[in-house]
Length: 481
Ligand code: UDX
Image (tube, rainbow, N blue to C red; front, top):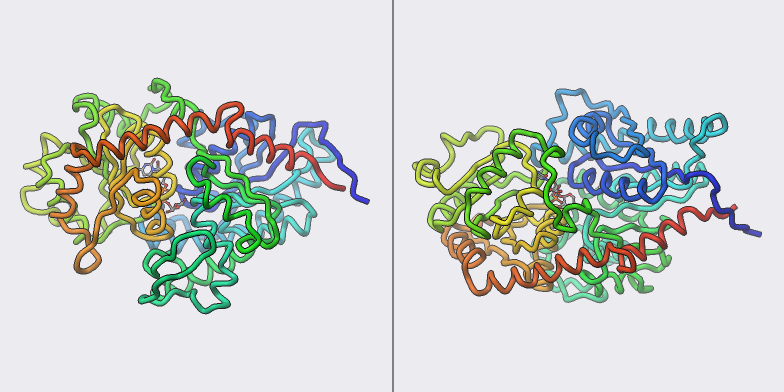
């Protein structure tokens, strides 16, 4: 008969992240939350990523988090960190290559625990893109919890994947229409995840299916969302039709630093870097809510044609902008941006070509809108700053996310695309003006601000995500022997 044991020592969890920034950032943040709840966290990822975390976040990490870099067998020069779809394909390979070292390390943690003050790990929390960790959890007879960095509305599709594959709906044909998923309005093929499309690389299709089908075997799914934001989708996730194995669902977001959620003044010492200073000084000189922030996250790089249309649209809009501009490898600002764009917009635009402090930019009072690829972290960060969104999705689940932003939450406008699948400058010019100055923009900002306040409430004592966190801690620290 199963008996319950409650850990007497500090509980220990192993965290395994997928090696791209959009997955690592919330994983580190949630590790900080667990550490402040009294956990020891052994955090693992590819060794080059861990080196980056040590460099950039060392000072902000809770001392109860131990970082371990896993060899990934990808030569250093080959890993072009944060450089578009090629780097994403590389990340898939790296994610799989981490498996042997991960198993060895977990084995070592269990063995060493006899002579150490750190007890054996109670569970593995691992990204939804490293499902091989389920086999390792099974082997060592510890639970695996999935860390889910996309929205609950995406997870409803993913948990329904076995049926969609059975019905031949996925891989998705280019002309597919009216795809029915229980508990949500029908979707067109173009809104389905990029990694499920027939037109996406086979390697990507295969990687997604292999990882996503195994969510049903896990002991629970931790999602970076909150009930007040995605209540309908969260309810759907708990239905028999979507979740026949009744895998526990833990919406405990938004997983973001507390200074950011509380709107506390920024501690400059925590962000000493030069780009940060340049952005802040420039924003300080702009009028309140006047600046459009433009960024496409950590992986996506729009085509050069799209970049040129954005430049023309920003030029014509006459609005101030802060653009994190990463160009495709063969392009340069001097040769590929429209002629005269840089000189004409010099007085009202700042272009940054390196990693920028997005949380600081979004929380600055001068920022009035965000042209975004609709990565889920960016959406949460924008909402939690009360900043409305101009949606220009690029890949992954971003098309689906943009619909959530524009149609359900109504905190953003979706840019329509014309020929060659590109949003054209006229469309961009009008949308930018509307977002920053128009009536609709003001209404969206009001709704975003209401969600920002809600977000601060849900993570505070008694809030829905705080209660879910307690439920997860209870489940994770109560082992069944
Ligand atoms: C992809 C998916 O689209 C997303 O939904 C999933 O959760 C993670 O992978 P990604 O392209 O990484 O997303 O974008 P996003 O989710 O927005 O994450 C990017 C993160 O990097 C954000 O936290 C953002 O603040 C940060 N960032 C990005 C910076 O801090 N500076 C930059 O210059 C660019």
